[in-house]
Amino acid sequence: MTVNVDITALGGKKLYPAMIWLLTRTVNEIPEFRMALVDGVLGVYDDMHPAYTVFNRESKTFSGIWTEFDPSYAAFLAAYERDSALYSAAVSYAPKPNTPPNSFNVSMMPWATFTAVNLNLYNGGTALLPIFTMGKAFFADGRRLLPLAIQAHHAVCDGYHIGRFLAALQGNIDGFEG
Image 1 (tube, rainbow, N blue to C red):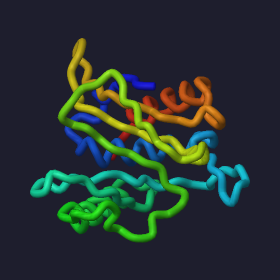
Image 2 (image 1 turned 135 degrees about the horizontal axis):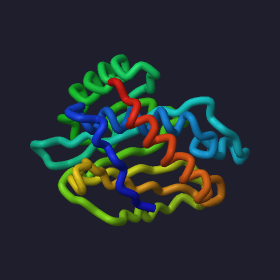
Image 3 (image 1 turned 90 degrees about the vertical axis):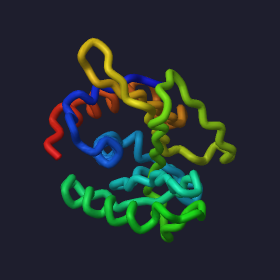
Image 4 (image 1 turned 180 degrees about the vertical axis):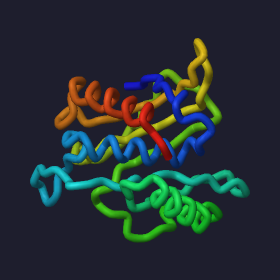
């Protein structure tokens, strides 16, 4: 599912880290977005951490890294900036070791506004955690909007849960004080 999220309230904040933090905060509020199979048993993680991509400007490649979530945006932003600086020149797929199992994927395509994104993953049906892809922000009717594609496994997350997630995310964006 792809929606346009109203990010007007974020003003001039750094969009990518702010949205990673806001997505993670919201994922941590909705149990269905924290469900996973661990050793074949369905469970709910207590908390989640974002695994996201960083762009190597020289090689024009992406690497996947992660940052531990902190409820304090200032603390998270400092850790994000440290991790991004350390790994953005990497050319390997996953340069930061020890990605926690309780992490979910976030990426951004700031070069294109889109109406749909479809990631075809072969995982035997066991990857239950959500995947978020953001696009290029744009203005419409005086508001700044961000395309957000949400890929969720229907076995654990229904339209009702996505609706709850989107309402909570918008509330978190509107109340963001980062």
